[in-house]
Image (tube, rainbow, N blue to C red; front, side, top):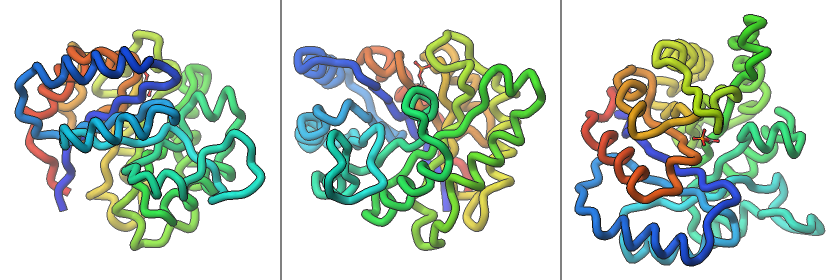
Length: 254
Ligand code: PGA
């Protein structure tokens, strides 16, 4: 099994219909042979619109930034994984640090969400990462181990090919501070060592202030299989530059 390089845009709660239209008009003007996986997770309301654009352009997979642990029922305001699968959504991000911190989602809840999404054959990008205080207290590996062990419990082996991990040190998200390639590679290698069967084929993305000018340094490391990108994914020129850098890399041997 090989590992394709992935560039995943997390648009968070951004973009308007006009901005989306401008983004894709600009993307379509840029001639580029896409040799990496290019994915975008817009806010939930925009998913059907992006699905339609992606259907016509063909090149970009569309996902969600979160989903409920339930399929349906009296859960006002939630996003059903069943509805996502019904819409043809390809993937869902689960456990982003903003969900963990602002919405108090803990590992046991995230585990339920991971299992609920996998049940509908959605690909899952499960996010892990330490805070600055945890890093400075030498707790990085303990935190990652716990997030992985608790968040990824009871996944059946047939669903493992649907699982991707994103290592996002919380101190690097939206701060302009990127982990050094060595710090990121060390964490990625640790994460891979903690995954069970199939670890060699699991895609592990790095996230946290990834930009066109630091993507190459990150992708030069053998356990970094791509990036989960916030701010820089909102501008077509930057997203394209990231995809173009990623397209220059060979797929990894899994
Ligand atoms: P950033 O966000 O690239 O703006 O740091 C990354 C993320 O939150 O996934």
